[in-house]
Image 1: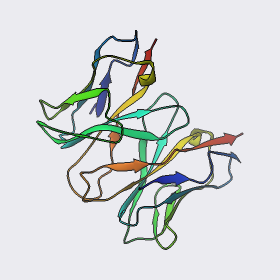
Image 2: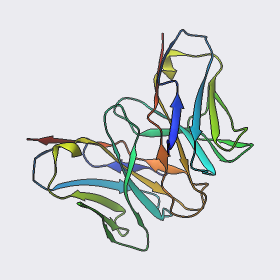
Image 3: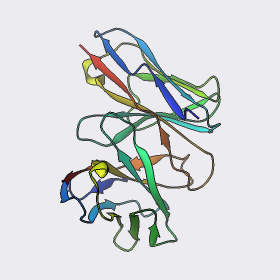
Image 4: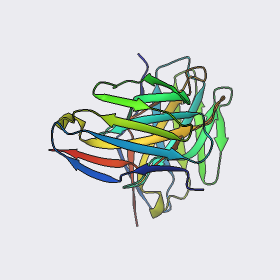
Length: 113
Length: 113
C-alpha cells in the first residue's frame, strides 16, 4: 500500500504563477485534508473534504482552492501564488467514523519567489 | 477558540533515559487525542491515541496519559533511542466535527548518544 502520495515533492514558483498540488490515497478513506506547515509551527488546516464532490474551508483558506472529483484524489490549487504561500504542504486522509487518526503524505515543499 | 499547545518547544535527553512530552488543550469538547511523530523531511506519523473515556494507554515503549480535569496530555517514551529524535505533535479532535483535528506547535526531541 502506498498510503497517501503527494506530487510534486518540490516546486519553485514565481509570484503570480498558478499550480496544482495533487494528493492521492489508496486506503478508500472518506475524509481528506490539506494543511500547511511553516517553520516552528504546527499544521494549519487549509481545506478539507468529507467525501467525493464536497469541500469545505479550514482555518487558512484564502488564496487556495480545492477539488475532490474522485474519492481517492484531493487537489489543492494556487491561482496566483504569493511569497506568503511559501510553505510545506501536507495532505492527509482518514476513515469516516469516531476515533480515527489521520494518515499523512510526505509533503510538497513549495517556494514562491 | 480551541487551541492545543505543547509546554516546551525542545527537549534533549540521553539515550536510554525516559522522555516525557507534554501538551495542554483548551477545548473541553475534545474527545479524542492523538500523538504524531514527524521525522525530518517526512509527514507526521501516527504513534498512539487515546479516547476521552480513558486516562492511560500503553503501546510499545510509549504511554499516553490524559488528565481531563486540567486538560493535559502527555507522551512518555521509555528507553529513548536515537531513532526517536523527531518533532512530536499532539492533536485533539471533537468526533462530531467532520474528522478535523487541531494540532499543537510541536516539541523537538533530541536524543544524545
